[in-house]
Length: 208
Ligand SMILES: [Zn+2]
View 1 (cartoon, rainbow, N blue to C red):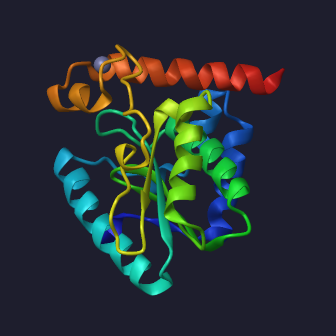
View 2 (tube, rainbow, N blue to C red):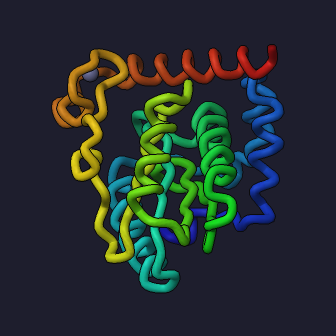
């Protein structure tokens, strides 16, 4: 399975630039994403990818001894690599890279069963990193479409509660987000439509 997951290095990040420029033209965009590299994934692939990611994260923290940030798009279903998820990740990760530009020890972009992911290690306190990323999750137009996880130097995930920040609300019904995820309250179509709409709004605003 590992061999099928194509990892883009930083030079290849240029690909996402190209994708973003064409973000409003769906058909064009799908041509720009090299489809050969994007295979179909099963729910099992997503689970095992998540396990492998945890190992990779631990080894990065051990190597760089810094705060780890993982940016993912919480796109529903198994087709997590598409022009919407790429466009959303591109925008949010560019913003986070700009915010922490003087503190980046490591940065990587990859296309996985879990969708596109940006991983960074920062020479910055985990509390500061968490506060800044929560601000983006809460206030950016696309902030609700992403999960930005922050880990301390010991590999512990920081929760909003530890910093006295209110829990995430579901963007569809305003219940605590975790409850909706656990009970699968919303259909894939419903969530997909929300993402599509948000991304369209974002692209419309960017053109103005
Ligand atoms: Zn909900």
